[in-house]
Length: 189
Image (cartoon, rainbow, N blue to C red; front, side):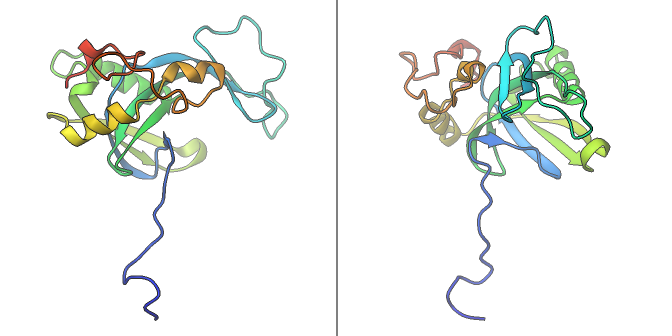
């Protein structure tokens, strides 16, 4: 052992600007209204998104390993505070089990708006055997530091519909410092 690196050092794992659901518990706070729509991956391995479902299967849709065409999925995307990364990120969800669980929380008057509480999604398994559970955490005020970071790094989710980086269109904020695609009256801070 040398003194080149600090004792117990490990290289940080960074998810970049997008939260990926890892094996085990994934805790986050939703910070924005959801962008909802449909997506498929094209032959160039890039996501193509639209608010509306396509009438016909796009000709550039990617093929699966077995030669069948991949499917078009319904997606939700929203800004989150990822506690594991301590960062503002975009979380995109295409799993209907997760969408249904969060929708149930939203419709339940005891829980309501998911911007008022943290959510923990636990991921177990891999591939087709992956299972998810969604658990709301008790309602709490959002830390002021998180609010400040969100104001500084608020993604423009609409950019995802045109294949652009939602973090590249920085600066589109209203007079209260909130992203223009987010209704400031809906945010609990």
